[in-house]
Amino acid sequence: MNSTMKKLAIILLAVTAFSCTETINLDPDITDPVMVIEGLITNESKNHFVRISRSTGFNTIGSTPTVDNAIVSVSDDQGGTWDFVHNPGGDPDSVGYYLSDQAFAGIVGRTYSLSAQVDGVMYSASDLLTPLTKIDSLGQRYDEQVDGEDEEDGFVYETLLFMKEPQGRQDNYLFEFYRNGQLQNEDNFEVYVADDEALAEAIEGLESPVNYKLGDTARVDMYSLSRDGFWYYWDLATLVQNDGGMFSPPPANPRTNLSNGAVGYFQASSIETKSVIIVE
Image 1 (spheres, one colour):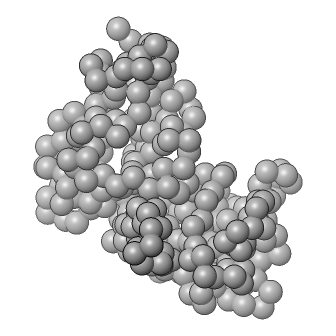
Image 2: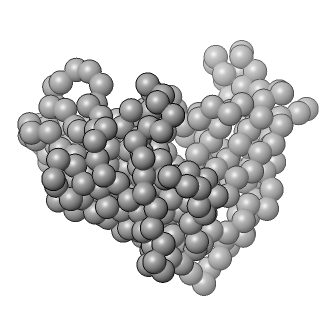
């Protein structure tokens, strides 16, 4: 991670952000399976998703068991309701994923609530869909600090993010970085988040933690987070940074908005995307 990212206190987290592969870190003292639920509602018009699985024992090797028999729905505080259907396309890689039965766009200012019933147990969560400032532009620059294999392979360009950060409201951000359509957050297991206390009003060239080579298409996806969402990721960062040494406290599960002992997070976000093709 480059120095600018460190100065802005953007936090490195070892967790996939709603992608098709995921690592959930739980307290090693927990031996019984725990329900793991994630969901994402955005302001894009599309079929949104909820993923449900069960945790495994701390020393268990193998994939996380998915849940395919849940009854899932999402509603908003204005009376809208959407049922979610398990893996409607029958994709073997999408077992455990539930998609809304119709496309819809989340609306800024509304609270979205999840209801998921699994084997007679009801799990619920709510999250506020908060606004998001626009990305003005995405530039590029030769990274003079690159060396080693990255330099030899030509990954010598970084992107620069330009935007205005509203100072009159509290904003929390989640960033994802893509190279040629593929998530590049360090083997797809890292997420970068920040709040506006770390960002100046005029963001003039925020450097990416990912490097690119000529001809690459660089893309930045920026999500808004509620304050609860920010603290969920903050807790994940604390968990990841725990070195597990003799005098370290045992890891605690991140705070969650889910009920009934489930872990994970049901998230509502605005999203802003910007791309640039790397040229000389």
